[in-house]
Structure formats: structure tokens, C-alpha cells
Length: 468
Image 1 (cartoon, rainbow, N blue to C red):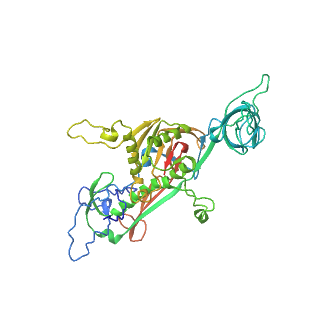
Image 2: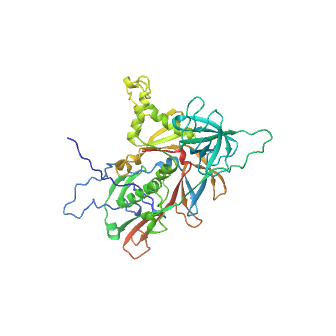
Image 3: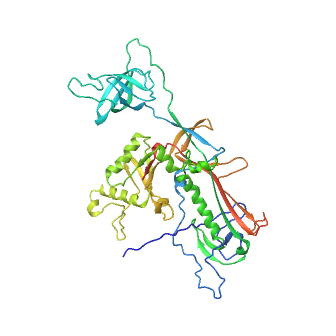
């Protein structure tokens, strides 16, 4: 009989409190502000003490999902409410339009010029080459074909090239002038795209009363960063901090700008949202759908990169199902993989273990594959789905930084955090109250506050592929 499984995960972690106070498990049972723990599950207000296991059992393993941006990005300071940069446009001129008559093509807002030579491609990949005879109109061009027929008339051999209103794609491959003729009419300005993003303020808080801090009870823990030791009743603060650190990353990944007329925009002009990774790639990058079932699906990824920046090395961050799909396709490429599973790295010794997974492959470009915990965790995307993975280019790109006023090399993904000579908002943490060492108010409690102000810069989004 099938079982019904309900997930009820929560966060955990080790902490570092700003200032001189540090929350770290102590190697022995020493009473310090640095290892104070609170947890309602350890209740000793009973007639008989429970048979208590001293050591906490880690049933969910490492529960943090933050690691993606640490691997592929960087953090760079910023001093403004708005971050702007310019990205290079295409070098060559291409546009889409529609055939209107025997020698005219409607092209809205084109940048073609008279005497340029073009290739016209229409339905069923029917192509023709032509000379632009007049490009002075803003929304159309007049052309003369090099072949012996017109755009919409019957050719001499009886073949019809196009019909009126057929959609066509046009790109320039050169130019031709007569002897003694004047030069090219007009010039082309460098094509670029201005991009921008604004930082958002992320906050969290943990609060515990002074009375709760007076209880002494010990729990031995091991934390996500490898430390181990004893905490006394402030583990919830540790988990708040770890959860906040995850939010610093997931906010940059999932961030959405407040659209015009949206409910968030109607609240206040100060609620702007931010352009996260998934939003930016879905708007300006490439989006794939379906599953990877064959070599042709992997080839499709390479073909997309051919049309974009052609970055040689790329990393696929995928959920477990997509990772397995890629492994199966790669295994099928082995000569005997379908029958004897002879792929993998092993030495045929007595401890031989079959390796059924792959960490990378080359198919036109180098692709490295990595599981992304954020897409698998039951309390994040692993439970709601919607995203199967993302292909991220490795290395850096050159952009024009409008603050520096010069070209600068930047990682394709990096975080800009707010900072000034007197205020660093990369990661702030402070303690207020009258308990636990804090002496800032008359309220009988301790509050630990967390704050950061940051934005993600996704540069060259056309080189990314979002897998849905």
C-alpha cells in the first residue's frame, strides 16, 4: 500500500553575532552568552525528568540551501539605490518584416541602409539575395533581387517566391556600389542595451525573554559548518541566522520587480522588488521546456549557445530528476552502456563500485553538471517544482560600468551590496534589550536583528538557459 509523506522541514545552523559576542558550541558545559540555546521541546517543568538523549539527532542533514551564488558569483560594494550597466548589442544587422509587393518589405524601425546587400528568408526556408535600393522610409525598404524574379510574382520558371504578407527575416551580408558613386548614406551607432536593478532590504529578528534565558539546559549539537559542542537554549537564534543567510541567496534568485499596476506597486513607491536570476533569464535569456531524453536534447543546448555568446565552459545546476535524465542520455552514448553498463571510473578490483553518474560532458561546448540542493529540498523548490535547472556560463564578461565610467570585467553573476564610508549593509547583526549581555533598553528580553541590502546583477543573460 502506498504511503502518504508530509514534509515539515525547518532551518538550523551555527551563528556569529555582531560585535564581541559569538554564538558557537562550547567544547565543554561552560555557561556563556556565546552558546545560549532556547528550544521549547526540552521542557523540564515536570514531576519526573524525561529520559533525554543529550545529543541532537540531525534527521535532515545540512538544511541550508545557500551555496549557488558562492560558487558562481562574487560580492561587490555599491553606494547607490540604482545599479546600471550597459551590455553590448549584436554586431550584425538583422530584422524581421513582411512582404508587401514585388519590391517592398515592411520593416518597422529598421536600421538598414541603401546599397547594402541582404539575404531574405521566408516560409519553408525559401531564400533570396537582394540589393537595397531605397532605405529612406522608416518602416519599409525597397529592394531589387539578384535572381530573375520578384518577391511576390511568378518567376520565369513558373515558381512563386513569396505571397503578400509573408513573414520574412532579413540580414545584411555586405554592400555594392557603382563606380564613382558617393559613399554609404548614414552610419550605424554601436548597439547596446542599458540594464539596471535596484537593491532590496532583507531583515529578520530573533527574540527571547530574560526569564527563558535563566533556565540552564544543555544540548550537544553539530552544525552546518562542521563545528560541534554544547549550546544552552539559544539554538533558535542559530536557526534564525542560518535561515536569514539562505534568504540572502534565495531573494537574489527568486526576486521579482514590482510591475506597473501591480498590488505591490500600489502599496508604496518604496516597494520596488528586484530582478532575480530566474526573472532576468526568463525575460532576457533562453528558456527550455520538457525533459532531456536524447542526445538531440543536449545538442539543442549547444545550438542555443552558438547563437549567443558561445561561452566555451558552462555549468548545469539541475534538480535530481534532470540530473538523472542527463546521466541516462550520456550512458546511452557508450558503446556497451545499454547492455553491460561499462561506463564509469573503476579499476576492476574487488572493491569495484559502478559509477552511474557523470560530472560533465562535451558536445560542442564543455558542460559541467552539479546537483542544486535548492531545487531538491522539500521546503523550497523541491516541493513546488517549476524549475528543473539552469545553465550558467563560467568566467567573466566585459561591460560598461556607468558609475566607474569605464569598461570593467565582472562575473556573469554577482551581488552588489549597499555600503558607504560609515555604513556597511552587506550583513548587519546587532543585539538589543536587557538580557544576554545587551544593555540598550528596559525591556526584559534579548533581540537579535539581521539586515542586508543587496541586488543581483545578471550580466549577459542571453548566455543563460533556464530549464523548466
